[in-house]
Length: 117
Image (cartoon, rainbow, N blue to C red; front, side):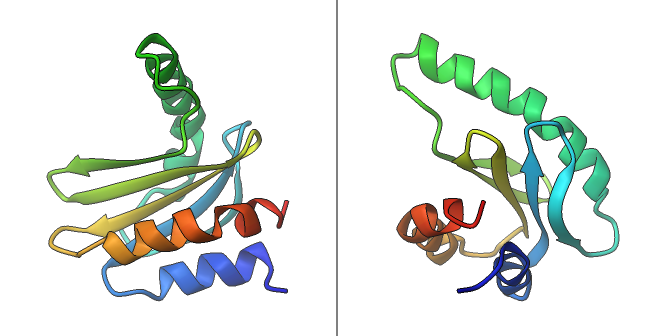
């Protein structure tokens, strides 16, 4: 069975992936791999606050619990996926990269990923 480190490395080796972090609810990285120019500690520290806002949005909008989201920025995409109550996966991807297969893999393997914690 792969470890969370194996999963992070596998995602990080994909074309166009600049960073992969699994972040705890305390804002600390459980595991991370980043390329130059990505402030992994900053991303990890900010993620729990952002997730609380997204969770509130889902509740207010009657959408239920947050699962996965894609955020588009000028310099690329951020894929955010809730794995457990205490672990969130975030993958930062360069502009112009098709993320369909990444989203499919996250959805398909979410329970296995969550089982690593």
